[in-house]
Amino acid sequence: MFEYGFRKGKENADYGGDNIKKLYFPKQKVIFFEENKNIEDSLKLMIVFGDEKEFLYEVDVMKYWEYNDKDLIEKKMYPLIPLQLFNLRKKLNYAKKKNDINKIKELSIVARNLAEKLAIESKELFDQDEILGEDFHSMLLAIQNLIEYLNRNYIDDENLEKEVNIMTKSLYDPEVEKKGIEKGIEKGIEKGIEKNQVEIVLNMLGEGLDEATISRFTKIDIERVREIIKKHLN
Image (tube, rainbow, N blue to C red; front, side, top):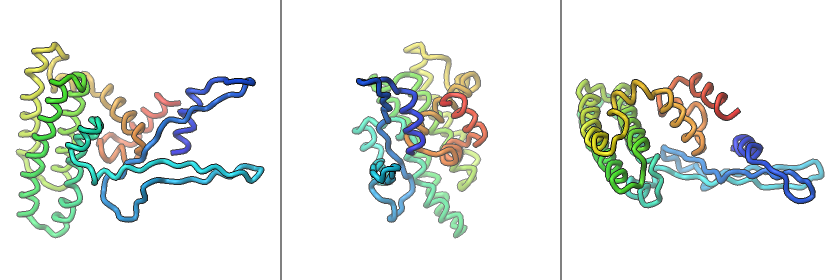
């Protein structure tokens, strides 16, 4: 976090009085997604200078499992809304280890219903002009990607991804026609996948996630994640 803050600080540096260069560190926060009682409310780094002066560098922690979709909307943390689906991973992983087929089927229904709920909430934000058309598109795409991740790693329901894709497309297409936003979700994926990857990686990096976590959540190859970060931040 300090290295990232320092890098961003250098990008925004300027000279103040007495010809002294100032580094402006961004406001940072680390997000932990899966519940862990050992996670503190902040991360701290003590920086000790050559003259033994000390400076405490502290970054707040967001414990994602303490937030539901309504909380995220209230706090205007809109890009994090689709990740509510990731909260199912722990239960699905446990059910898979126990080979509990009935529980997995039950969680599959929960995932389908939650995906629809989050997609509808995203549409409501778009209708209220809280998010732009491209943001709405990205959030629906994130919902699709997370359903695909859960399905292919834990659920294995051949109909789940298809149902969610149809559902998200049905929400998006009328708005494309009404407000003239690009051409629908499938064409947007074909033509804009590289742009979406860049936006998603940089947004998640800005939220404090590391390369491995970004790759795991988005299913973007870690080498591609590193390539994006190197190209756009260095």
